Length: 250
Image 1: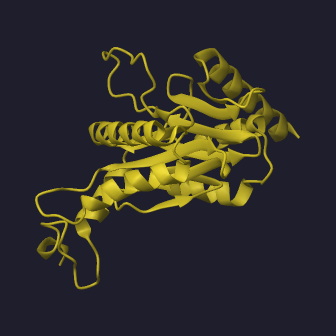
Image 2 (image 1 turned 90 degrees about the horizontal axis):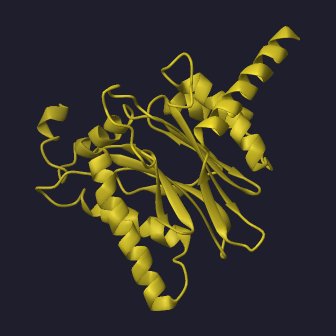
Image 3 (image 1 turned 180 degrees about the horizontal axis):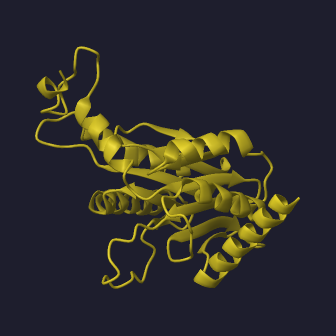
């Protein structure tokens, strides 16, 4: 049945489904996972780096977490080439807004701008949906710290904790059962290690397969987004392993 209606993004099936959009969403489920948690003093994002080949030269910048503006970053799951188009579009929108109004574009407004662009690619023939999902983490003076998720259809929503990419259902199940409001950034980091341990395909998570990024405010009120170093990630994983071992002994 689906083969009769999946040739174009503009053709609905009798059940009201757009199969091209659904296929784009399925492609994201094969990408490295990313999990975000909204803490009371910031936001934490953990991302799994898919190792393609040992012969590849390591990237000098983050492969999964990208800066959109000084107050907003995003984690990517899906086709990197598609993500680059949307990232450039978002950066241009943010700079135009700042030039016009002399202040940063509100986080949700920028997310909505990106999603409108993504949704347009589901309405016209000769185009395909963007095969990428984003987790957005940022702060503005209107709503404080915010965490959003968007998918290829152009839908977006605000979350306290959510996951995208491979094994996202398992991650969401764990977040739903164990997430506690009022977590600090440090507590959220420790919790994210447990979530990634349960959801990653690898049996032994390591610093070269994971990256952690925090979004916080410093004493001057400036937004700081920082990726943990490999040494800090190793220490975080070792502490989590020690805590698991000690709780198991009890």
